[in-house]
Image 1: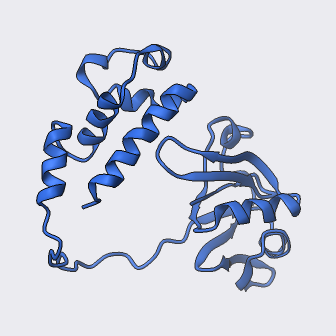
Image 2 (image 1 turned 180 degrees about the vertical axis):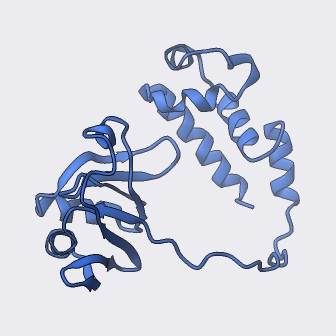
Length: 208
């Protein structure tokens, strides 16, 4: 369980986002029963003291009140035994649909710094690229999988890659003239991310 100080920081961040007019926190404010019917604009027009932000953080942590959350974190044992291990998937590898596997692998290698793991077929119809543990598979398709423009219109993200140095990577890809469709952004859910598109229109999100 996170320490109480972590929850306090999350509550202060909610207050700051509300003050800055970040519409993405509207859904979190509507978790409070008294605000359930408000629109995002109405939620941002509220007076939003720290106590209400703390109430939201408590609810998201599974507690009815901030006092209950505080008591729970203070009572948590510091030498708790690790939870028993259960079988879990080892990794996930998104599959991107591309028109030309060789050209796509070249793009990821030359512009985004990935390495080519393998290309299968002659000419290749399937392949894999990776960088620092993040792996993307490439599958050739002979016609678009989505209706033209649907991926961009619906904001579809084909792969979500966690990276501890997202700001450095963003700077690197700016210098490489990558097609960045969302600049580096601090999100209401707590992370910082940016989104770019490959030549086939696949949106890749990098988040830290």
